[in-house]
Image 1 (cartoon, rainbow, N blue to C red):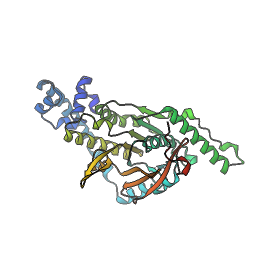
Image 2: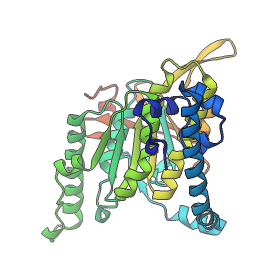
Image 3: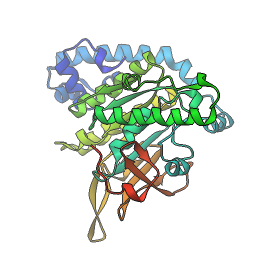
Image 4: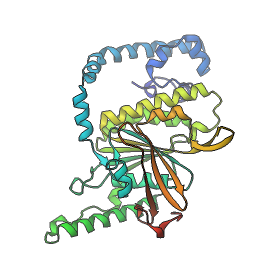
Length: 345
């Protein structure tokens, strides 16, 4: 049971989330005085909340203890085989897919960061469309969740139409004599398979991440979650850096758990900030170096002259490498000299 199920008002639930209490267990392990101070209620009200959280947290641990032990009993050989046969989502750029080992991998959390205008949102939209490519065409036939960000429906439609055209061309090339292999997808159906959530604060973002487990359980064909951007609300009016670190850590653990439990890809788009290094300021991804531990893979997008490049900065299984890519009217594609520094709207 999550915070959202507590029998208290919405304002108090919001205060709990804002204070860093994202699970019943986190409430159950605090004191009455601290809880009352953190959420600005009387100690009697804090006691009621604490008693409820303690009872239900204990029930969850007792009912799920055996299951957790069983789920943890996996051999390294099984894990290796799972990785070998794990699915991936194409980026529509062959050079980028090549350095990624086939695309964005499921069961992993991938962070993609870069300066404004480099194409982060374009890649996010491309992945939300490409995850729906049918199994017959080498895709996953799944659905997408898109959270926050500059979500441009017209641009999604444009990329969806291009994706269907590409599949039609593929089908015609390999099945010239068989009309039954025609693409049966429609751009509107692609839009219907993208679930969009908009959040306006970090508390809403945390609440939504907590809710995703239930949502994905009810929509098991979801194969990618895209957060654009994961850092925006956590960079606004945050004075308690220790609290921010704790909230981000808990959120990242939940996202990793979602990726593993539901065999889906989580993609976090990140912004850049400046860092003072040896007497000069350098661009770096937001939230600091410690945040890099919250993801499986970290990809940094940058300009090399007038050409966009993607660089694998961190990965346990992929070697560091870079690849050029382009943002075109049809979406993300291989780099071409005719599509440099073009801003897509």
